[in-house]
Length: 134
Image (cartoon, rainbow, N blue to C red; front, side, top):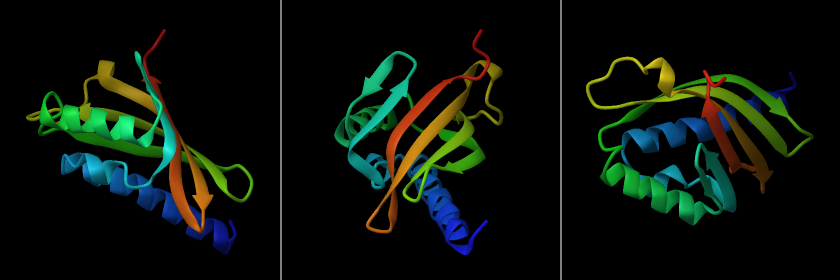
């Protein structure tokens, strides 16, 4: 991997780490800090069409059913699509207060699409689905 790709990979990992840290802090504003304005997020039964929709949904969740939760995430791969785009594949799950392990029915495969703008990697799209689906 070239030095540039190594730096890009590290920057992408830092974006995802920031998102995980924001979740742990229940901070919806920090959660979307590295999202582009028209970012999309698709999860089972939901489709959010902007950074603001994602922020509002996360704020609502952190104030209610996600309160005190964390995520258990593992990056599986980072694949570059040209110079300024990348797809990350990960496994993820939500740990609710008191849990030490994510139950199998709450483990998800996720894809993250990132775009490099003005030398900064930003999240353009997110999608997840159950890892144990059909």
